[in-house]
Image 1 (spheres, rainbow, N blue to C red):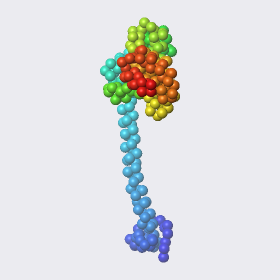
Image 2: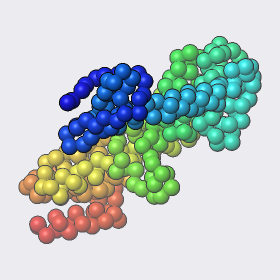
Image 3: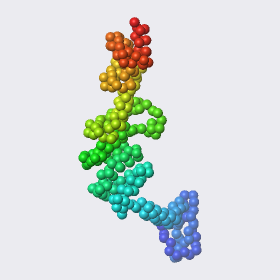
Image 4: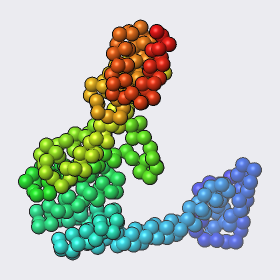
Length: 311
């Protein structure tokens, strides 16, 4: 006879055996002669494991809670009682030692707690530089723009304009580009154009700034890089057989970057492209300019040989 769901009360020492899909689980009968059937073995095992795991679960939750409390206490802001001078001193010290990450943290705390204090102006410039050195160009540009907008007549406002140009000048340069010679003309020209505009704005507003000379030299370098980028594109078009596009790119260099080192190569591409297109008059005009301005350049030698073979 199969009995079900009779809760045991008192043990009498009498065992009963109940079939459960091929396996039997023994139980003791209860007082009063009533027999009790144990649950199938699988269910017994589940209940046992659940009862066994409850203390372990509680211990795990308690350990996690204690761990969280420990982490919370460790992450407590140690600078919460610092004065503005203390924050600025620590930030400046970290900046001078090259610890830009902590310098940024201190400057951000200073700016949040004392936005109008005596250290606020210099701290905004300092954090812009720290962002720049920590390779966060967008944050650096944003800090410079805030400084220019908030303190347009500040005696160090020229530095904010200069730093903007410097950030864009070096934007996108990785570890390899910074320490190994890499052709800057092969990089995306968008940041180079923006850096050129930033330095131009500095020279327009502060022509006598102590940063003006360095900005001029960087602008010369940027123009040359932009011109050489256009020549790279023109050369690519030549190799692809897009001679009209190649001639137009080279012509753009001649018209917009006339004093750069890319000029002779641009003229040489114009000679070749016009010659292939059958525009021999334009090809000869380009060759004359090339001969008059760069008679010793390899581009002239090659272009003259090309035109000489065609008669």
